[in-house]
Image (cartoon, rainbow, N blue to C red):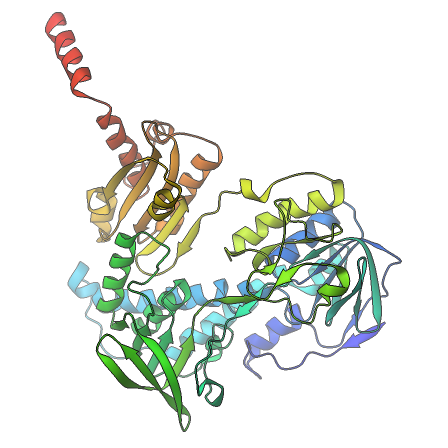
Length: 511
């Protein structure tokens, strides 16, 4: 048996009580790795969401399971992703609502600054409180052998963790991804941040420059602006959230601008210059070159799969530095003993997708099933204010695939609850197969879009047409009524001139 002592983690603040409690759960100091079994039914590499779900399912079925983690159990979601970011976003919304309560609702006038350090401390406390569900002790109690250390494959059916050799019948790779670092001259000379370090801040940045206008960049740019930071967002394209509907991008950008974010489109960071503890960013955009003085620099330009140092060549696992591990529709790698789930093998990098991929990969691995990852219907949400939620096909995808569609749009201003809440910004767009009520895709832009998209996801997954949503009673008043209103709008379209003439004849006949 070997003892492991964790080193300081970039995602945590050294000496912070909440972070120390989190670390003691997800990488306990002095944890003693168990003696390996002669052979495991399943070895899982990586203890983020995909790995934890894989290990829990297999152990629950009675399999001999080993779980290997080199850093913190819980992965990005718990430590540097979903959990800390949504805590800070919620705090920023509270600050914004306090400032606007007098003008919007006749509430008390609020002045003065807030406690940024308190926001960050609340986040760390909440994160520590959620950690036990992902912790080492819990998984040991589930019957999983938990190993801390670097995993490296040595053959098609074995890997090492320190001095221990773990032999397996099947394995699941769930090593996730890390923040991509762009090749910008001068960048290595400055103390920049990614999502993996930004949550260690205790003092509010004076001026935050964010490079990247995808979901992470937009969420954090708006949140920090609402918390009182001057924020500049650099976008190499012509609109934020480029994979979403253009109308959704426009609404989010308008909201971010109102909150104080300066968005620079078609702008490239050409050089970073150290300025003591801060830096400057030389950029080039439509107006030419300029220099931005920057107190804090945040990189949000995508993710890179974690495939380096795993010995994948020895295991015969095909991979690519950009795409990650190559899998088939059963989530099986080129080594039929080894499967992969989550960010390491998927271009769509969401916690909930890793969870559901694990629910496919483990039964396929252990029982020779043929469940397909392509059958998954995956919603996504960007947690700006308003939120943007989407499931299924977008307009751009429909055009590229030449799929004929009918489109139903309902503005949120037509939803009574949205009016009462003062949250009329946004819309619901339902994309239907031409001439039918079969739902191909749904986009919702609203304050609570993330809470509303699951009804559409269920409908697509279960092949329920829009008319089924229309015939389902929704409580009044709720913002989720927007989907029922979309169904009503589609039904009204069916009243063609011919149908109206027949109805006119009918009512004349029975009068």
